[in-house]
Image (tube, rainbow, N blue to C red; front, top):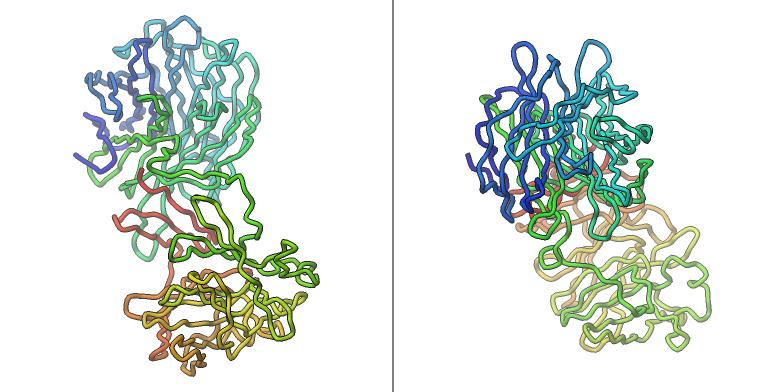
Length: 579
């Protein structure tokens, strides 16, 4: 069975699973080997079994064959709600030790327990015996939907910490939590005490079908915590949504479980195809000189289950993902507005830039005094050109701050509206164009309506639509009207048709292939909440676009790249694209 992006674990015999784990180790031979755990749901007691895939190549493929499945002895639980494995040299004697975690879903409160198999060899044998099962203290959850275990790299004294992770499944929103056992010895004894449970921030799922945790030294030298969750998408209409795996990286993990900073967002595991999962796991290892994230998932189709894993680059590759660099020169203008000009230069313009003091200063717009309203950056030489400030008949600078922008067909940039006054903000009807060839601003015909925070969009015939915004009195009078600029006649025409009842400030508008306009529902600093709709300025009718609780967005290769869960969290998340 071939699935894009995932590798099949052979001979996965289970039809129902209640836990899974993945780990890597080198056995001291300079080769990376893969270890997977599955919890088989039997008719009576469950069964925890593992196997080793020998010698991974740079792509994470097993080249040396697989061992058979080996039982974790004394697996007593009849119901599990998660499991995982980790491998480390706990004794510092060069041998590998296997740490196994399971969540026992007994009658009443759940129980998280682990044990250590001492002296794991390359054939999967435990040569030094197993410890007893040891309780993770203060396991408070009554229902879990995933768990994980990880071992930190050794510190200067060779000590390793145990990280235990779980997903608590209360009646409402789920929560991912972890705790750290300081200094785990080869007998499974925690000699440095346990931390309290620490919440993973930004947990959004109400239903999970698996989880995992890993600890690794990141590229910058700091210790990182990686957590994974499988989100079980909610039912939309009569159909349940497709699942999706996510991971998030916390940088700067200390012995007390505190993370200095978390990545800005959850990253999606690409090519996730499963609609039902029965747990998963993650591990981090160096492979081919690069840090790799191994993601395990159990697919639970109507028939027999299957185990798959995927290998992702944990560290960004600049040749694939690009890179950011802080430039060692100032632009001189706060880039509230920015536009890429036709010849590759960039125009930064801000006007007063949300500063009432700047707005009222007699030096506002004085280029000689360094108070310019716009500037043109020319890479790669990083030179700057300051256009002359455009002034109104009363010799005040035309304040470009909070106007709307759109390109004309000849490459000129149209900037309409802006700030007439502060406290409260009032819109203006003035319109200017920037000529990238001459490097100058000039006025064109003003709009019929003053606008602050308007939305502009270039139409297919080269005209520009302007709509929404606060009016000249700071009110909502401009939210319900639209007008179109014709550059051939340098004139605006107010539209009179049964169009939208109103749009929020800076409404997110997109021109469709057939000439109609799509409003996505996106907005800026406006309490008006409006569902998406489509309108046609040529004909007038407005078509509503129903949006379910779960909204999936796909890219050109039919991969899901973002989703919104509106009535539960009113948030959207972007999923990482495939590397």
